[in-house]
Image 1 (cartoon, rainbow, N blue to C red):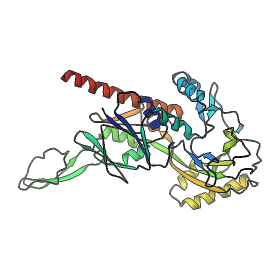
Image 2: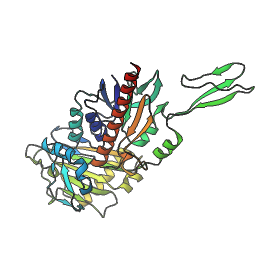
Image 3: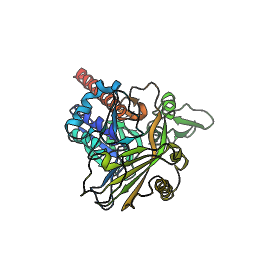
Image 4: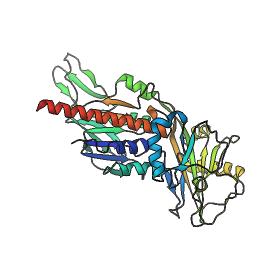
Length: 387
């Protein structure tokens, strides 16, 4: 039975783990570097009130008419379990396409991912596991992280943003130097290297990475927009007097979107504090991407005060930087995933291989799960042929 690692507990990783349920796997393990599930579908809690929450990533899910049929079962399942419900609150400036429908998650957008992780039926999910290196070891993948010893897996599925895949160390992307000469033989030869030809002069040789040049170029072509999100959390009973639940801003260089988040999610209650979410423009996000987070927070608050001068003072604030907010250019001609190595299987997916919305992540999760199931079936056939 195979041991499978899914790297990333966002929507693609969570849905993929759920789709692998019952696929003749020995054990599915999910690692994520964050403290909780969701990825860019994260829900944050107020510092003084855990019931006061705010969606700092995706704000709502849109089912477009052209995607309705292939993904209808996914929406119906989430709706039937109360994970999603139709967006009925007033959103000023929102463009609604003909035939589309918008949904919110009453318990927070991360509840969608948590639902899929629960549906994975026994997957072991571990947070604060930051993967740093992937290397071949005796026909398996040795996966290293910032804390804890390396672990071995038969199959590895990568669902994090594409630049983070390219930043991994080990056999996956790095080339390894070794020196060879005819007198002393091979020096510093890594276990995956071939035998170099001898000569009278020392030669620098390289072990090629697992990602070939064509794949590398495709992965490097992927681009993302960047932005900041601000969550303002209030004590129960605090009134925020605006006539809308959310509003798109078109005339401010910093702020693009403001949401009274609990109002948008239809969970207004005198016992639960309100929360406000602010998303910046992409231009602002790019300009201040590497600036001090405290300074960025103050800049956003100063612009927010101009737009909503009567907004009460919050009890706590969280500033979130989304370096990889939304895909602006995906891997060209992708089927939702890319196989980097066949045996042992190493495959990557996510919205960088489709598009940055619910349907794009589900498309990738389905494609990843099919690739893994097909791989396992081939292994099973090979074993039967040996009997």
